Length: 172
Image 1: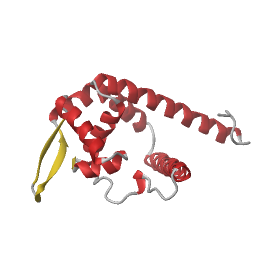
Image 2: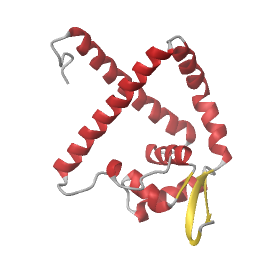
Image 3: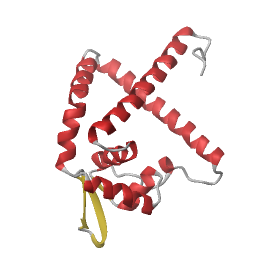
């Protein structure tokens, strides 16, 4: 990819920093999965459970863009590793809910605790107005990336509904 996508140097510099950040996040995801003893898909499933609290296997399958059979294998691995458990849905005994175990929280603290503290320290140096601008930029950037990803999905499989746009994706 070109290092200069825009004629304004400041815009190009920010784009370069975003690409660099994405690379570091990708690297962190790989290393974190290794620390958890999981693959990246399984770690992504734990992230979804962490944000939502508990999900049905069907909700997880939609969020991961997997079949329900494929997500069953993911859940089996997470249960075997002690990171997730299935339990009956209290609202409908025919359904199962998947939730993260306390082991996830302990492992997250080991793997991400220092990063969280460092990020909080970094953010505390900004004013509330600056943080609002940063949040706006990050939100809009995330939506821009999601829209582009959806367009790639549509190009590859016309008529397919991207996982990020399916209803009931994740309760968060």
